Image (cartoon, rainbow, N blue to C red; front, top):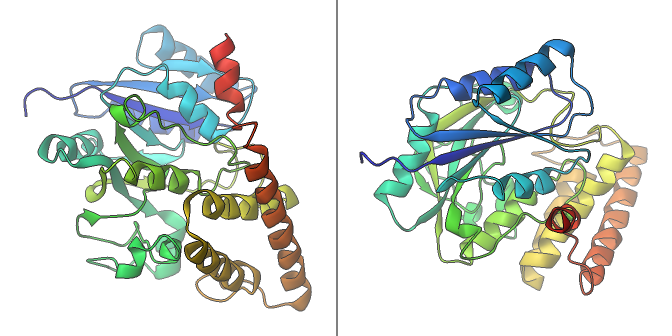
Length: 326
C-alpha cells in the first residue's frame, strides 16, 4: 500500500464564506500523500477576506479554483470531474469538518477490494445527531435499506457503526473510482434541480448497474455542520421553489430508476411522510399545511413527468453541453 492513488477532492460551493474556508483548511491538513483540491465556486461575490484567501491558495497551487456564473450542484460536480486528474474522486460539502485521516480511509477501501466502486463515508450530521440525542447506534442497517422503493427511509449513515454494502452515499462524503465516469460514462443528472436532493441517490443507483459495490466505511467520517444559509444551490429550503423541486426530484428518481412497483412504494412513502407529516418526518398536521404540501406533491409529479418526456429529445445536461462547446 505504498503507491497511494491520486485523490481529487471536489468541493462545490455557493454562498458560503467562513465554513468554506474552514473546510479547505481541513482538507489541506490531510495526512494522505497524494491529492488535489478543486473548489467549484458558484458564489457571485465573496467577502474580501475569503476572496483573498481563495486567491492566495490558488496562486500557490494549493487548490484549483474554478469560478462559475451559474448554480447547479450536479452541474458543478460534472464540471470538476472533467478537470480532475485523480484515480479516486471524492466529493465533500463546503460546510464540513474533517479529521486528517479522511482521505486515507476512503483510499484503503479501493486498494483492499477491487469490487468496490464507490465509498460512502459516515456523516456526523449536527442536526440529525441533535434529533437522536447522540446516543443511537446501529450496527447493521435493516434489509429494507437495500430496497430501492423504500430504502431512503431506512438508510442511516449517521448512526451506523459497522462497514457494509449500502444502496447509496451522502453527497457531502462520497467517493468513486474514476472509471465510473470514464469507462462507464456516468454523469450526475443536471435535471435534479434546486438543492439537487436525491441527485446522489440517482447517481448511486446507476453506479450499482455497473456491477461495482457501494461500500459504507464508518472510519471515513466527517462532521456536516448543515449551515442554514448558502450551500451548493441557489434557493432557500423554506421557499416555495424548494418545495416544488423537492417533490420533482423524488418523482424523477423513481421514474428514471425504479420498477413500477418500487416507484409506487416510494411515492406512497413520500406522501405518508412528507405530505401527511407522519414519522420520521414529524411535520405539522394542520389541514391547511397538509393540503399545501399535497398541492406541491401533485405539481412535483407532473413536473417530473414533463422532465422525463422532454428527455426524449433533451437529456437536460445543460451545463455539461455548454462546457463542451467552449
